[in-house]
Length: 491
Image (cartoon, rainbow, N blue to C red; front, side):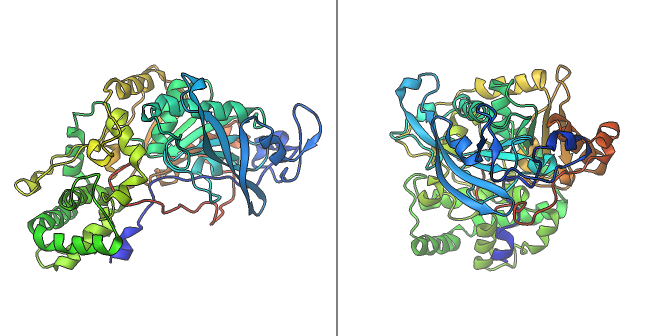
């Protein structure tokens, strides 16, 4: 059961591109996807000479090649790009930021993807990339290794600096990929795409943000409590709450199992402070993590708490929220996320009244998950500013949420002053919600909007949005969702 539960759905909607147009792409756009590719050469826009796309990209100042990986019909590059550590004070040094480029054709639109975490170095494509049949540029978020300045000045890890990273990458590559651009990302990547639009609204021709949390007021989290009181079915909620409560009732024998687990895995708990604090943090994540990654139908695999053995309770909690999550080794990769959660993004603090009298620490703040030698100060106005801007100024922005995803309890909303912007909710979906999971009418509306923003809507779609379909053919490998999550409560 542990194996069956652990890899249910991925956090993010991932990256990529498919086959496409050559020199005749502009003429073919109105009728649908093009058929040729400029894999080997492309006429240089500036020089007029035939130039390999790799040479064109590497001619950008600060761009260097890490490796090129073969993929049939495409060019896939893993690159480094030199960025200022501090865009406000560029003379303070630089660092190397990883980028991947899945190249199709410079005559096709380009999708700018970020997960908000590490970049995948395996060829993949996001849903918008498949819809528009375009190129894809994917960017690693600053401070996620190896894209971390040395020494690390953590005060330069904020959403404005990250948006400036994207802006510089866009400006550099726009000279080669001159057609329309759309930014996208899932979860923290959806947040990242939104913040980028806030600070550089002239760059992108559209934004598709998946399951993007919007914790406007960090110390006001009743929306999450209301969500967890009503999500799914009463039967499933009761079953999950019982297992979670039992894990604290049986704290002593289950902690003994955790001690063995930690010894076998070489886990330590210096950052969070103790094995007991880590144990409770994992248990308190259990219900949230189930709804984040699972479906109502997965409740059938949850054991009955009253009759389950200690090992069954332990394995169930581990499969859903992951006992390695709050060990030093599990936290290290995500230090930049917890730093941002504790300085700008905010984080949930839910009540869980069924655990009253059993919880020793309550929901622990991000400060507990970041090494103490890294200073942190929360800035409450940052998310308020973004939320207000989106409500009033969103232009060609799309937000897609899952009905059963806790992170969607506080969503982005678009108001009267916005233009051609949309908020959709996929019924029954979790943190893996996408356009394909929307009801038929909204699916067509969303697909047509993305095609329109990218400048590749066929004539039939322009006349009737109900006819909108992805332009790229399905590709099992390229469209695969990478199961890259370490089970823990993060977007």
